[in-house]
Length: 290
Image 1 (cartoon, one colour):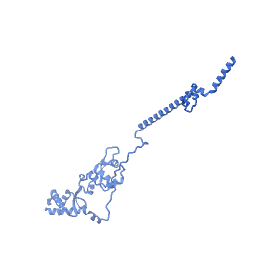
Image 2 (image 1 turned 60 degrees about the vertical axis):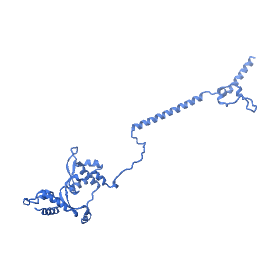
Image 3 (image 1 turned 135 degrees about the horizontal axis):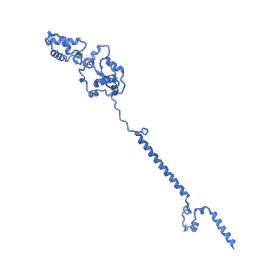
Image 4 (image 1 turned 90 degrees about the vertical axis):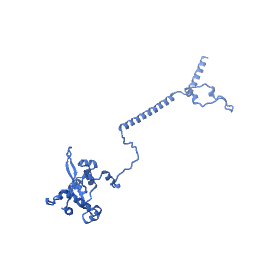
């Protein structure tokens, strides 16, 4: 069979099919008398791919086979033909699907541990209904949680031939919306006394503070005891009397009596009546003797 005729048959078959077709499925269109090999079909597909350059459609190979589809650059205008709006998926669904795609096989508890939130059952149900994910096994741990993996339908929906065509995680980080990034600013350092990091250290500090307070109390008590001892100690009149000079002050005044009289103790100064009574008793004794 001529290559041009083969191209026309394959192109018509791909346009008439509602699903992508593999090389083997395209080969079933021909019988032995046509003498068409898989190599010839692959050559025709390559030629058809080159013929789509500069056109509004393209021949794309996905996981399920080959298919014709609208190019991305003209899709905004073609999408106006359909009254039904394209589905919009939540961020939680896309994050869950991405974890399954990049870390499959993975269990639901593992997804929840990575995301930090509980995975809704509706999200798993939606992806299973769209045949994007399926149960590929069970983890050999208590509870036997199901292991999820992606399907060919997932690859077909996202125009992927295999999982190797998934974009690297570094490119996904670069594609993130800057407004969705959360980069907390560093807070100024602040010491909180109410919240101790080490309870033992806080207890030792409290003991040291209590010990310092006890020492201060003992010192104040000792000072008060010393002051009481000084009050009970006898002091002389010279310590209380103002300092005077035995010489005259310049106006011809006589020396003060304190300079002529001997020093007396505080008890004698405090009880002058006892001296008077002693002198009177001595005078009476002399008169009696006379």
